[in-house]
Image 1: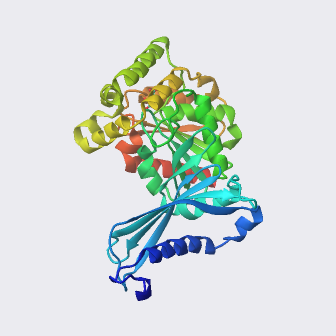
Image 2 (image 1 turned 90 degrees about the vertical axis):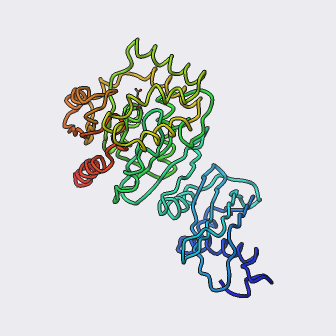
Image 3 (image 1 turned 30 degrees about the horizontal axis):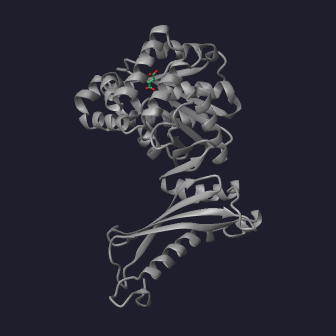
Amino acid sequence: MYPHECDAYGHLNEAGFLQLFERARWETLARGPGIPVFRKHGVWPAVRRATVDYFLPVFPGDVLEVQTTLEKLGRTSLELRHRAVRASDGAPVAEAYLVFVMIDGAGSPTAVPEEVAELFGSRLSTRTGEVVRYDVGEVTLAVDVRGDGPALLLLHGFPLDRSMWKHQVATLSGWRRIAPDLRGLGLSDAPKGGYTMAVYAADLMKLLDRLRVQKAVIAGMSMGGYVAFELLRRYRDRVAGLILCDTKAEADTEDGKKGRDEMAALAESKGNEAVAERMLPRLLGRTTQQTQPQLVRQVRDMIVRAAVPGVAGAVRAMRDRPDSTPLLATIDVPTLVVVGQEDELTPPAVAKVMTKAIPSAAMTTIAGAGHVTPLEAPTAVSRVFAEFLEAVREG
Ligand code: MLT
């Protein structure tokens, strides 16, 4: 930054900051295809709101880096965050939040063209791995997208969120890792009702469409596995492979359904603290409970911060899910079954029966882990995922 951008006190002034943010944004596009992409679709991104927070003074000679992330992709809007940090020590100096509305030649709001959405999605979110909100119709989903390559869709369990995949999102390079929060959980919108496996699956298809993904390997942990079965039932041609992690194919028994009604009532009357109390002892393996107290706290926090309607909705969606056992013999994509040795909810014996029923599925047991293997034994899980994914890519 230069002296002429400073005010009488020697600080980078406000106008200078705004210019800096503008330049950072246009430089992202200048790497092409850039501005012609707006012209081609007859649209223009108009700034509708800008908020700037200033944290530290900046002086001539300071070198600043601006990181730009896509925070939300709506039907007609885009929301971006610019973070300016001092290059010498990484200290955040200012942050700008901008809301753009896509307008047509007449100045009316119009849908963000897919090509523009794709441009922002790949330039910003996949480079940084920051969470982005994608409008998929009735709701927006919070999604981590990272890396390039064939797509891997990571579906979390109940009552968890996309952060249970953070190690796999960070490490499975060579794949475009897409980890959404299912509607109602994590940072995704949580409408009051209307949760079913079919609704989750339809949301995910719209998400893949938005990300221009034709086929993905689907990794589903527990409830994520139930959703993976639904995707297979309804959208088989979009599934390139399957990882079934600590999950099962059977529907709930009558007793199980009663248990679901109690759990939904517990969430609605006593909140998620009570859900966490009830679930934690069986969710995490005994080794984790004894040796990783931090992880126990992290999973508890994940449950407690979820929205109650989303938790109750997920419980009812699981209660009403169809039996997926008839599907198993028809699975004709590469399939890996992963299970924690100490998983009490979907134990290794259940995983074994499921593996046998799927033609050419392989099974791996993860030592020292319970039901949430991707978090409890992240290195081992990432390694078996990576080996399987390599085989899928080569096959
Ligand atoms: C999960 O981890 O997703 C749940 O335990 C699944 C279930 O309750 O059936």
